[in-house]
Length: 258
Image (cartoon, rainbow, N blue to C red; front, side):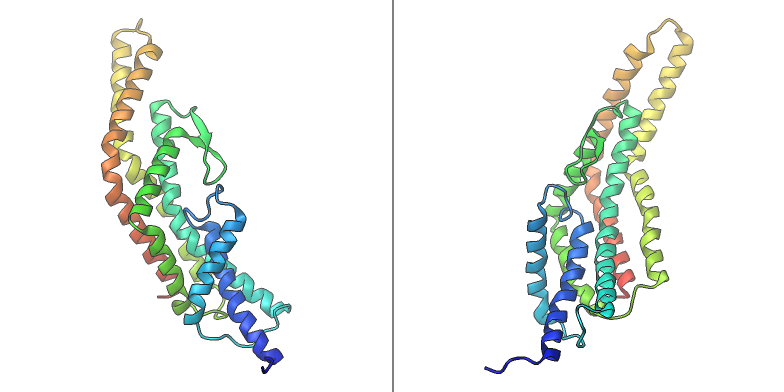
């Protein structure tokens, strides 16, 4: 058996290590895969498994000293690429959380908080409900499979050990921050308008009957109307989520130069 030369060994290690770094970066930020309830060893095993599937389709990279400055810079670049890919898609679900917070504040449920198992932070119960609902839709639509397929195609658009991330590509990522707020408004606007009408009606009634206890009457009415609007909102989440995810995937391909 012929032992590989140091250059051949370096190429083999770099060909496996750098794709693994990109996949791991995506797992850090991507929806579902980055959830806090998924143990880190399980996330690492998923990254290794995905890398092993993708690896035979990738061309070998140039010989690189894996403990040198050049290899560290290449690894950081691959890590940033993976994080940006996952973050662009994750912003869709952050918009859902923000929409839930907006609706909950209008209903008077802003004080009803619980720990989000995905992030480990406290969010309103309504936000957590909408997040779980949309995550189930995401899985039912095979969104996680589409994300992994997009991650695999990223090596075609942006080869391993290729160019570094430019300012223009970073601008695509931070411009997606606007989609966080626009997506939240698109999801929550029916409830916001309905609750605004309720608050205006309660204000008019309070002027006509000053002795009326607004806290005893207005709070239950606002909560009831809010629940009714959320019930009507749920069927519309499917087309909204499909549109938002499609826009996020297009943004990822634009970021990758595809």
